[in-house]
Length: 380
Image (cartoon, rainbow, N blue to C red; front, side, top):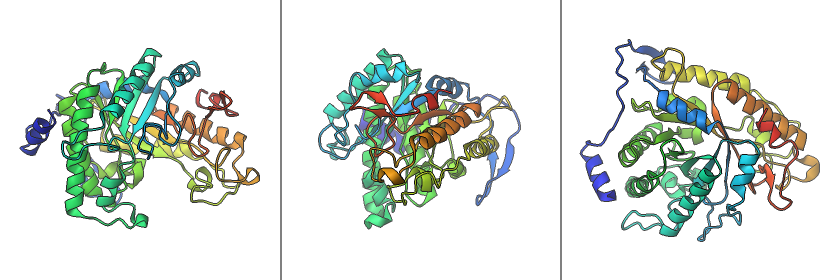
């Protein structure tokens, strides 16, 4: 199946775009640092319905996306009981980040069967507890590095290596999308690639397009989620050429300002000194840009938007000393304002994150309690 999908893609026979069926005139838009482009109105009803189902969600991070050779991630395995806890807190969905290339077979472009089966088991548990699921391809360091990302690690663009990793990426997606297509279309979303950092937006755009083609062929009814370069910045939607397909969602990540959200993770520990929240203004602007670039045929909506990650680190347990870490009250306040801004702008979200995630944690897996202010901050 994988070889058939990739072969068909090579001859251009697999693009399954959905025709909006409208004769509405296109809208003209000139984005920042971009050439004039024509915006084609699309009927995004299917994507909007799925986005509403996702609603308020949370990430199960640092687990299947871990860098170990086993399935425990950073000693933070997803527990069977987590899904009931998340549902009881009021969430509608979970996002499961997966490092699919771990223990994968480059000769056949197939993923580790134990990893695939484990993710499938978690999806079944989520669904059994009334939660929809976003499954994404997370931490593909090798692909990003070959594409010239992660320069601080000495990575440089290598055309041959990049094409090899891209072929592996597409092959794995063909297998994963085929397997996950067995789940109901209204319960599972497939997210192409988490936070691409390849510095050439054209390469990222083509990568997203090619992966979309493979996934759409293997899973014709599933909602497909896109991210832009610069590690999934909302404002870089303008760098993507999204397909004329009404069953897609664009996802951006939001950690502004990083001097507050990433204290102890590359930024100085200053407690609440850097606390600031402009989410209402920012998300409103992102929604306006999305409407100009990818309007709905109804003249009101746009390509559905998701905030796939947002949160504040620095608190316990993290690398900032307690007297220089963001306060629990500050973290909860920032999360509340950001979540409210998302909901008011019709943007679904997935908070980063549920369990042990370098201080971003909303839930203490040792005491079996939510950290102060959570999950209430995300449910207002």
